[in-house]
Length: 153
Image 1 (tube, helix red, strand yellow):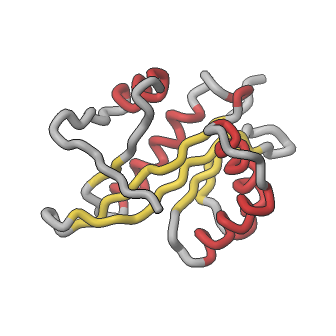
Image 2: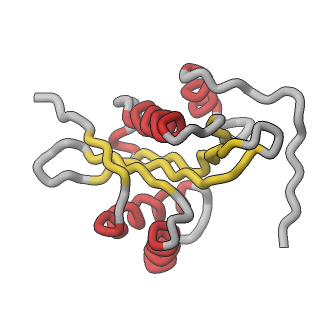
């Protein structure tokens, strides 16, 4: 019997599950594991309502968390509307290729649309062709007109 992925908007009760995924996500991007720091970071985002997180469960009796997407609010001054920054998307390796990332992206889109946002914005590495393929298959358009500049402290 095929397992059905279940998505939920993360609440404080899911901090531990999201934190474990968030820690794995950071490790995937070359950071040292820091589960306590990940837990605190996610807890603060949810307590302060500074992000919206959707978490994917594998549908088994154990309800194992297999992925998440995190959105941060921003605004478009020109359109005078909210824009959500899709900052984090992660699916554990054993759940990849099963549509979980696509489901999380759809949940993010549906959430943004239902809240009257102008849209979603995301960035990805030039060499992350798998992610680019997913995003483009979902209707995301590559920006060819603007350059991104960053200033780090």
